[in-house]
Image 1 (cartoon, rainbow, N blue to C red):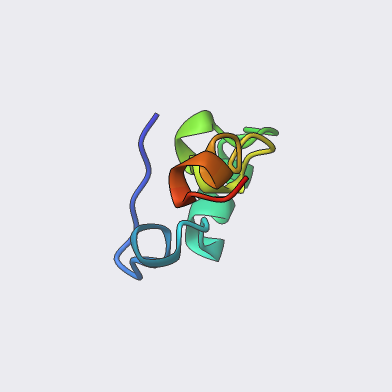
Image 2 (image 1 turned 135 degrees about the horizontal axis):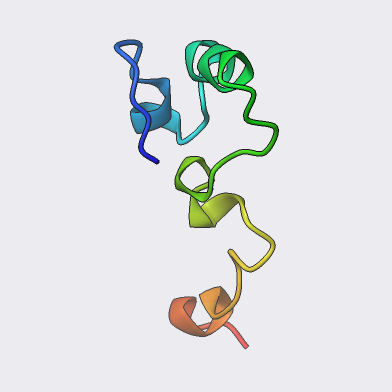
Length: 56
């Protein structure tokens, strides 16, 4: 599933806006679809980051 909104919060900040959340509630979707969770907000977001930045 893909979601977008004219307020552009998802595209700008990577966070679903209240408009998208209202649609999810209206459609009785109880979990955020993976398409609404950017990799930077996951537990594995920092994996490999230190090596890429040159830190040990």
